[in-house]
Length: 275
Image 1 (cartoon, rainbow, N blue to C red):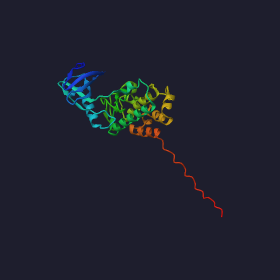
Image 2 (cartoon, rainbow, N blue to C red):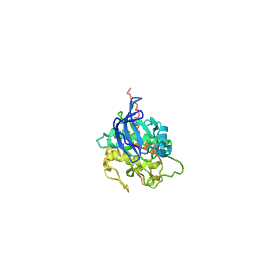
Image 3 (cartoon, rainbow, N blue to C red):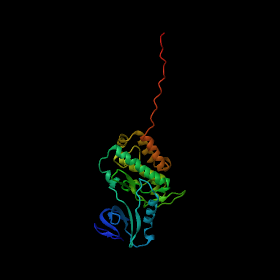
Image 4 (spheres, helix red, strand yellow):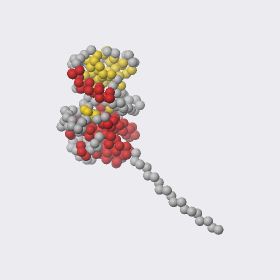
C-alpha cells in the first residue's frame, strides 16, 4: 500500500498542495511541479511496489491517454516511478463536472459542455477506445470553460470481439457493460445519462422507461430534437442506440443547429407602362 500524502510533503519533484479525491484504487492530489513551476494533478495508485505488473491498469491508462491528443481529452504530462511509487501527472483543473452540477448553470454553458463532452468521446471512439467509465466526475473543467475527458483506467481497445470485466460506475453503466460486454455504444449510453442529468437535473434509473422524471425540463432547456438524441442514446438495447459517439455528436449538432430555410425568391413582375 502507498502512503497518503499531506500538504507540503514531497513526492519527487512534486510538492503536495492538497488531496482532491480518495479512490478505491488510487488517490488524486493537487501538487506543484517545483522544476517546471506549474500546478499539476497527481494520480497515485494505492499499490507501491516498484513493479510494472502491479500497476498494469495505470500504465495502460497513461498509454491510452498519451495517444489521444485532443483539446477535450485530459493529457498526461508524465507517468513514472518515483522510488517504488508509480505516479501519473496531469493538468490541474478547477473542478469536475460533478461538482459544477451542484450549482445553477446557464443553458448555453450546459450545451457548450455537452458538445465538448461529445467531441471528446467521439475522438476516443474514432481511435477505437472504449472509455468504460463515462460519468460527471471524469469530466474536468478548466478556467476557460474548457472541459476534458479524464480517467481512462477502465478503457479498452475496441475489436470485433471484446471481453470486459463489467467495470464502471454503477449509476452510469450500460446494461450490456454490466454483463461484461462493453462496446462503443455502451459509452453512448453512459454519456446519454450524463447529458440527461446535465439538463434535467436528475438521473434516470433502470428500467429507463421513457419519459423519465423531469423530461419536460430537458426539453425546455434544449429543444425537442435534442431530447430525441438523448432518448436514442438511452435505448436499453445497444442496437437501437447510436453506434458510436461520432454518430451521436453529428445528431446533436443537427439538433442544435437546424438548417436555415432559404426564403423563396420573389417572382419579379414587370411593371406595365402606359404609353
